[in-house]
Image (cartoon, rainbow, N blue to C red; front, side, top):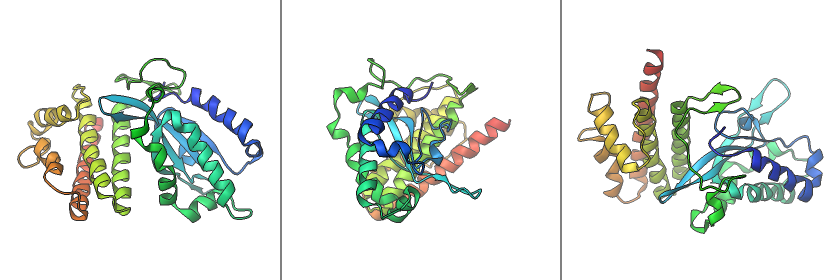
Length: 287
């Protein structure tokens, strides 16, 4: 129904709140929302603490993940705040993510401070660094590769899905994920984490190319294959131009140290590519 299972973890999140944080059961200020995919059926984008289903590639395997969104909500005067996409964590660490966020609020909020004000006061980078240890893939366990309510190794199925009775545009979903990766690149650049910034920009190129390959009915997961197939299918017919070829253009990351200057340039080029991908897709949809 979604990229990763939201119903199984929802039961466990509720159990954590009722058993470990009973006072929050009656807290009408903090809204916790979840969806199984980026499509906002669960309105995670308007949550104090929101989650949506996603995936993370680790080596040759893929594990179920949760995108964590914070600081959203309705102000009550017709205005609202869209939550920030802060970090992505393995799904099986979702409970510890909630615990960390609620513990931090209990310990550090000012007297009478609502969660939205608390988040705004400390800012996105505070929460990114707070949650970053939970996103560490070097400490993965076997159970992290299993989705909630599943005993099978997780995989992202390439098929038309169903969400709240409507059809999901898989290409649009991939483009949405590409926008996320570009956001992470910019966040890492702002935090002066240049190697991370370049890595996320690289994934912006790969994911954007993968989205358009899907429109050509070309399905592949290997990153190098994505680059080469994009050269054949889209650069080859003149839809895009990258000097020598797309593969060489993207793989320049192997020729440069992770400096501030290269990170800024590479991210800017990734952003331009993403805009070209969206424009190409828009023409296809309208034709």
